[in-house]
Amino acid sequence: MKPIRVALLGCGNVGSQVVRLLDEQAGDLTARIGAPIELAGIAVRRPDRHRGVPKDLLTTDAAGLVASDVDVVVEVIGGIEPVRGLLLAALRAGKSVVSANKVLLAEHAGELFAAADESGADLYFEAAVAGAIPLLRPLRESLAGDRITRVMGIVNGTTNFILSAMDETGANYAETLEEASRLGYAEADPTADVDGYDAASKAAILASIAFHTRVNAGDVYREGITAVTAADIVAARTLGRTIKLLAICERVDDTVTARVHPAMIPRSHPLASVGGAFNAVFVEAEAAGQLMFYGQGAGGAPTASAVLGDLVAVARNRVAGGHGPRESAYAALPVRPVSEVSTRYHLSLDVADKAGVLASVAAVFAEHDVSIAAVRQEGRIDDASLVIVTHAAPDAALRSTVDKVAGLPAVREVVSVMRVEGEES
Image (cartoon, rainbow, N blue to C red; front, side, top):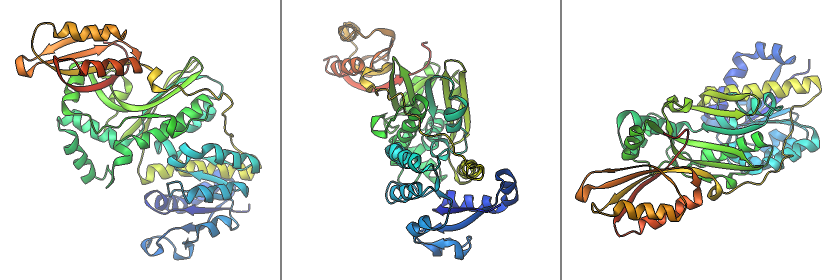
């Protein structure tokens, strides 16, 4: 059979593993696809830094490589430009694209799919959300006959490592971030991870696929973990819970919600036991019920595994003369703002230890129609604190309640506010 010629854009941590696997598994891949894979070239910025790769494959002309006689473009560079232009050019020319670029897909999936539809090319991106975990294909294909109602998961390994370590050791956020950097779990600039941007991009992709609606990163409410304290971890443990940074996508009353924020979840929940840098996503569907996908969500080899899986799929399609699933955005459901989402809060208040404090605080909750599920007072005099857990209420009502409580004379400080997910306790 005529070889499937592949252009690889990028040869860093993931790209170098793609090259290795293509070489080591060449025979098996040929048998699985029905045609050999031929690596036509690798676009990089600095060819001298890639000594383990055949020099004749390296080029700094990414646009020229994409325009050459190749069948598939595999992109593991990241970012939006110039990658967006390169992939649009490939798709418009009828070349299939495999990408691990969550940021690009969360912002420009509609444009990319339109180009793919026009030419009949494939666009696959399993590696963009959860590394090696087979997640997007089950959502796009295996559950295509079902109605997904909720997707909730841990989709960022760096933040999960930090929160898991804080829970296990009692260390504070700054100390644990430093340890994560030392061990290579956190980037030199961890902003995209710890401020929730990475997880928000992934949530947008998950919501788009699960609910057949275009959801962009800007539609996703986002909070990071930088404000999580050791005291929050202890408070969660007191309630039999732990804290995770969650991406939560829901279909409610023919609307879609997508949010990323830290939350207390019961230790009995399947996601609570996901430790270290691992990822896990919990899916709920009307007919299938509850499903959980777990594994390594990042790293060179695990992510390359997902890239190779997509490459095999698009190569098989080209050999057979067909193509994979197209974008499914027919539902076009409105995205509901987080202010309208029903949630629960855990509040810790630094208060004066005197008569009437609880009554004044409770009056504010009643004024905003927010029901209190549990309350307890800790400490005395200058070290007094009030801990409140609410029943579910619109997020806007809870925020207004917190703002007004903060202004009460008896409340010295709102120490922490944390959302609570999972069954009430």
